[in-house]
Length: 473
Image (cartoon, rainbow, N blue to C red; front, side):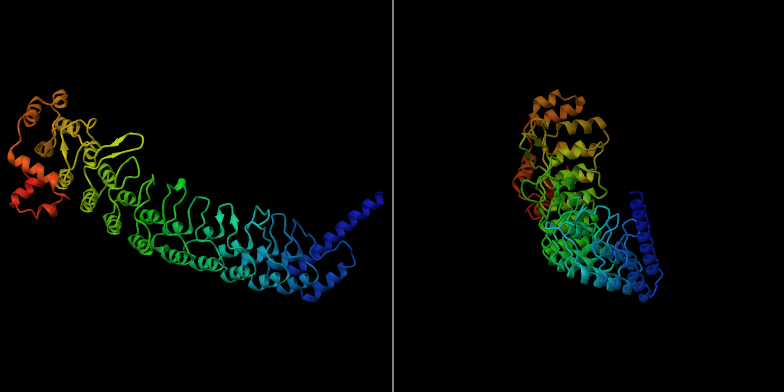
C-alpha cells in the first residue's frame, strides 16, 4: 500500500516535470524538433498528455498560443491537444488568440474545433471571462472577429450587460457593420434598457454613421426604452445630446416627433423645451410636433416653458405660441384633477414675472378671467392679489386689469386687496364695459387663431390693433 502511494506521487511529480519542461520549451521558442523529441519521450509515460495541465489548468497549447508560436501549436494539435480545454478561469487557447489578435493561430485552432455554443445562444458556464468574439472586438482585432463569425461565433450572444452588439461603441462602426452582416439583431436592449441606436445618439453627431448602419439593417428609429429610461426614443436622446445635426438626421430617417396616445412621460417637444435651446425646439416644431399634446401632469409644452427657469424662456414661448400653443388650454385627467392654464401657472411659478412674457402671452390670446383658479382653471384673481401685494410691477397689474373679464364679485369682495385696488376692480365688475372694451374682448374671443400676424390683417387702425393685442391702454 505504501509503495503504491509512493509510486503514484512519483508518477505525478514526473508528469508535472514533463509538462513544465514542455511549457518551457514552447515559451523559449525551442525548435519544433526539440518539442517533438520531448513529446516522444513523454509518450512512454501513460500519464503524460500533450494537453495535460502545467499549472492552474493551463496546458502547453495555452503557452503556445500566448506567445503566438504557431509551429508548436500545430505540433501539439496533431498530437491530440484539445482546443476547448480551459484553465481555472475558463480561458481556452482560442480566448488567448482572440484577445491578442493572432489571426493565423485562430485559423489553425478552428481547423480542430469550433466555438462552443449552447442552443439558446448563450455560452456555457464561463462566468469570469469574455468569449473569443467579445475579446477580439474589444481589442480591435477586426479580421479575427470576422474569422470567428465566419466559423460560427454567435453575433447575438447574450452577456450579463446585454447582447453582443450592445457592447460595441457607436464609434466602432466597422464592428457594428460586421456583426449586422452576420445576423446581429439591431433592436436588442442592453441591461440599462437602451438599443444600439439610442446609445449612438448619446455621442451626438459622432453617432450618425452608426445610426445609418443600424437603420440600414432594420434598426427601429422609433423604439422606446424601458420604464427605467422613461420610455424614451432615440429622438429623446438626440435632443438631450444637444446636437441639431443629429436631430435633423433622425427626423430625416422617419423619427416621430409626436408620442402615441397613452404615453405618460415627457414627450419629444417637452424635452426640446427643457433643453432650453430655441434651435432644437424649432426643428421639432417644423417637423410637425403637436405643441398642445399633454402626456404628463405638468401639462403641455407651453405649461413646461412657462413654469421652468429657462435662459431662453421668451424665445421658447414665442416659438410655441407661433406654432399654435394655447395659453388658455384646459385639461381634465382621468383622476378628475384639472390643469390650470399656462398663463395662470406662469404667475404661480415665480415671485417676479417678466413683463415681456406677460405681454407676449396676452398678445396670443391669454385670457384674464377674474375668478378664483379653484372655480375656473383660467382664474387670475390670486395672481392679481400677488401682484398687488408686491407693488413692484404696476404695469403688469394694469395690463391684467385692462383685459379682465368674467368677474366674480363675491370672490373679489373676499380678497384682502388694498381698498383702492379693490374698489377699482369692483367698479369694473359692476359697471357695464365700454363699447371699445366689449369690441376688444369680442375680437380676442372670436378671431382664431388669435395672434399678432392675424390681428395685423384686421381692417382697423394700427393703434387699435395694439389695443386689441393688449399692448396699450
